[in-house]
Length: 195
Image 1: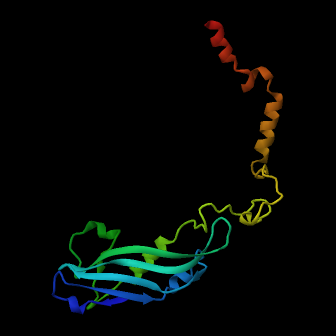
Image 2 (image 1 turned 30 degrees about the vertical axis):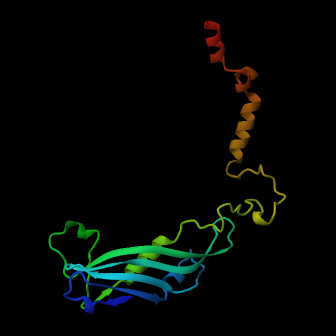
Image 3 (image 1 turned 45 degrees about the vertical axis):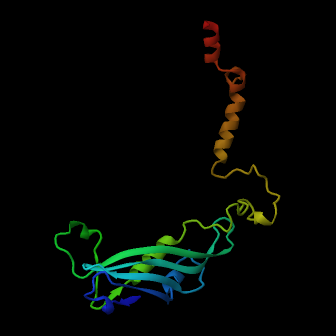
């Protein structure tokens, strides 16, 4: 998205507001996004700061994600805020530009495409859920637990932990009763005998 700033040129402190809608094809390519349901809605204010142009505003877009617990489709709105200054000329002797290059004005326009894309990409949740208490799927048979319980045993052990379970069972069978927690430890008996 390119913004024409010729109306603000040479007028420090002046600003204008705009509301734009643009397609978001870049989101449709992501595996996290099932479907893009509308355009990016950008409500922006552009201000001439003298040194450059400050762009501040809010972005929102309707998308369909997938619940990370039950894997059902989930319609949601991604929303974020942006704030970036586009400089007329690069300042000299800025050492930290190696990591974060300044945004510059391109003639009478500023290109905020990458700013919009980066801001919306960061706003996608790492794990989206359809409801806070979504029970998800049964880890054994894959039944959708929100529609009812399955017949799987709740004590099913992860196959990776099965050897540990056998080891614990063997230890409990071979440990003498006087050393088990329910019979008290030998240290406790020693402290009691001294007192």
